[in-house]
Image (cartoon, rainbow, N blue to C red):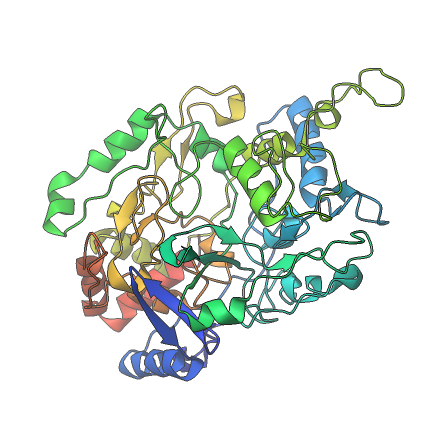
Length: 489
């Protein structure tokens, strides 16, 4: 799969898409983004090998689970795959609660590459090529939505956030997800007239930023890692980090001060919170974690709340339902699936990949993308006191102008992001929080702050600036080896 860099497909933002940096928002067109990329290609001989072919290196349970835990995993996987309609009345779409606004109708629709539980699907997948399913979803079952310009067949699954909103002629921070579509016009939503957000107008106002799905592989180990382990890991190698301008901090719960670690800005405390919020935001299903209907205008709320809830007794017989999965809410099943989903399996073995692993550490990438952490005592023996290899410190770092999205979540500011775990990156199709590129080389260089500043950013530069410079100063062969190593993860 080796090919010249200039030939690698780059998913650049559609014309009119907005990259937001603090209060400075820059319109980026395809020609500009690709032009910058090709200039980079002409100066260097290395290239991203592309997503690794062969069987998916992830998507199954931990081998050490006992047979009862494996049964729970299988049941939870079935729920994760479930497709939702408005009230569960459409054949083949037995789940209920979709809408009134939504981005998808199944967890597995978005978390699909290279296997269920992963990140955005795409046409370049060696395992399961498919067009962005959000395109067809716009008009499914008679819905009257228009596909926004930033959702394309070749591009990643995305959610859209508005940086600010106007109330009483005053602009105030927003940062929330605005559903791509509504159930208006669907055959199972008679009488609902909720309009789709006017994304064209928001794009024209430079007010839209994007997020793509984060992979969920191995997250049970992350959840089982004590706060003290993450704190000690962040404090380690302090002199090296200081010399390179790397600091970082852990996002924390506003209530109890413990470490949050899930989501692009580490805004979610636990897998249960992560699942409950996503179910409400992405599919519009209110649940025991988030019990209030979003966009609940008159004529568009069809189910009692919470739409997803624990099912302790069979509504017909009044008897106990029995199995853990059947009794549990969808959100609990989602959390169980993610908790018992094993990490990706790396294939690092060739001389190039092994040298790339050493180079990865020597230039400083490993100071944030921590190769190893150890979980604490866990309810599931397979997750208890295990050393695992996420290539992340799960801490927030200032990334400067180039990656800032203007959104604050918890303690995370406009240019801060959680270090993205790199395990499984070898089979991932889209990179960075907004999926702006499919090329690892471009993703690495985007970690640089960009040399510009906004007065709303806490830091004008990126904590990765000096590391990126070290990477740029490598000989081409070492750069290529580092890329080959990343594609082996």
